[in-house]
Length: 242
Length: 242
DNA sequence: ACCTGAACACCGTTCAAGT
DNA sequence: ACCTGAACACCGTTCAAGT
Image (cartoon, rainbow over the protein chains, first blue to last red):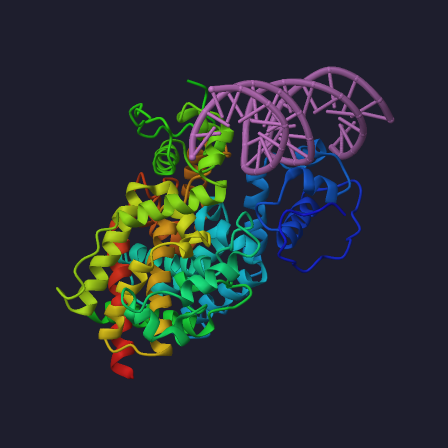
């Protein structure tokens, strides 16, 4: 086992037996497993080849590109989202169930979350999800440009928020970065930062710009529930107004 | 001028005169300019050195790390955010002004936005922003764990949403990817995707998973305004309830 | 204190060649 | 159709050496 650049230990997948001849699906499946194990930076076409016990060129034969692998990986993760039945619940409840399902899927693959939020790859995937969400909003009487705007507002909030929650602590930075950052936060001057210091117990390591653990290690459950209620209350208010 | 991997043409900065001896601030400033010009993938320590007309090792002497450069770049962009006076407006209006100011700063540096949303770098920066936002929420009677949750809910929504809006179309993919994707979207079957096809005029290239232009080329202004209103209405509802 | 020049251990990707 | 082996043009980072 070669030394890995990332020192955050992740669950090691068992040495899955690789079927030969290789096919595209197992390449993508192992790519996801590798990303789960070592993170996005250390995910390398060469490392993927090694995990598959072949040569890099072989990987390229099955899948054109690093970008295409990542795109395919996102699709796999999206397929893991268990969508509630669109007709089984009122629109607002359904949106809540979807948001929670999306979040738990991403928490299973925290290293993929950044990809979805940040890259265009998200587009290539899953018109199934898009169709379902749009149909629920349509049923909730969001129509035409209001439908588009409501979709963007809600989906962007969910995807973006979870992306922030799971944003990676960078492997490049010092290993003892988190200890440094903790003391830095705790020693903020009460003259310049009165609100932060007055509420330190509720803020330190619990709030976006003042935490030193990632969302995978320390999920922001309460904040997510508030955010979700906020999004849905907001949509309700919008609906009343038109 | 060497061939650039990215073919999306961006505004070229004028050949800024570099003061010698070099100092950390100009390294960071040029790093931001380089990222604006060529994007995050093509932003390279070697390319930065070339832009500064020195050797890579010289860059490393002034700034420890690629990660530290990116962290410092975020800080510069954050400093460009023009914060409204916290006492000049009621809390809900102030939050709206902040969100718009954040978004315009990110639209000036679309390639940086993904960094902020996705990486921990965001943390290192700007307790100034954090303090101000918290003070406004505190004044709005969000206290203790409610203060933390409201902060996370709102800030995560704003930062994450803008990150999604500006998510890059990947340079790795084919140059004619967008044309391909357009026909792919337009030819979706009306049997399987009835809502999408029925609302195609309002959705195509205007909605998160069905667009082929990035938010830098085609900003989602109306959707952002709806989202913003949604967030603030949501916070108002939360306040009424407690 | 700051810069040069070269090196090390990697990358993604391609290509000619094998079976 | 699928794999091997080697190569090309890059990376980030470090180090000994110069001024």
